[in-house]
Image 1: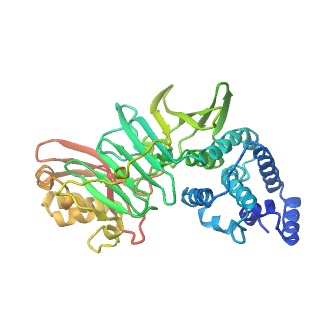
Image 2 (image 1 turned 45 degrees about the vertical axis):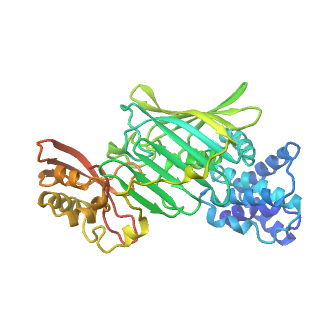
Image 3 (image 1 turned 180 degrees about the horizontal axis):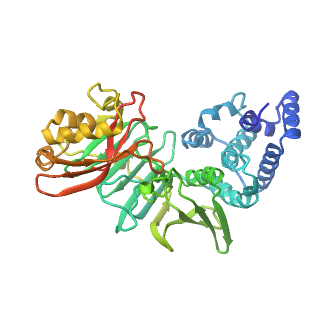
Length: 448
């Protein structure tokens, strides 16, 4: 039995019906692997600590809720989760024990993944995380208001330390499946339990529909689910040796100092998102309920820090109307499915490099070949004010196209360009293109 198998099956050790053969395999592995043995010891201690403080009533609603949260949380171990449940009896004690263990398990695993010196500091933080997650299992809804330094119509995760604060609002109804909504000036995204719907307003607005797993937003999504925030912090800590500091008083304050994640041989993407910045994240928990109360994120800027995100309002268990999970589009805008965009033979450009794709795009704008423009920037011809866009960008003059580069965590490439519009205005930016789809087709993702 290897470490991965031990991590997947360790929950069975807390089941009274575990076989002697399986116990023997664990014992043999623990004798050779102190890391896995320490993990089991920590899990045992947490389980013992939980027993006198947790009271759970019998009922199908509880079982459905915990299973639903486990399956929908989006953890990297998600594909393995159902292996824990085969053979589970309907008895309340067994359901409770395994459900609680499941919640603790996916907090501990990323942390104790052979991180060496980090374990002692993070172990203390884990206690706070674990208690907060247990407290969150009874929450039915969450509503948040934040202010974020960003730009209107930009991606939800985009930050700009020189920008003014903009308001974000988030709603979440827990369940199986969950429903949620995030909105900011110029953008709204909704998950109605079946699909995700992303609408960007403005002259070049678009409306995209995707399945629940499509990555239409990234880091910002974790704010919808406090236990997701904490779980993700564990994964980041294990991978990047983030440091924790815990202060106890009337509240519990947990500070996370994290380094920018990604490839910064070219620093273009540095400080464009929270994960791609050197930042300090400050969480405050209610000491009596263990629930998250506030969050602030500061980004390093030379010798000083700049506040880029602040949670200003947080409400639990307030009613949320069903119409919050519907987006009413303007009459001239239609939903386009993400799958149909990628699979369409007239979408994207394969078989060339990103620099060549950039050159083809700007030549198409220069020649007013709107079919090619729409091919590389899907949805262009469906924009709400297409005639204005054609007038603004048609007939441009290409001044230069530079060498492509990668930066940060962006899965595609950036290509520097300089063009002159018919109005005389010069645009000098980096075009973002990605081809991380199964067809390996370049699609323009931003920067224009």
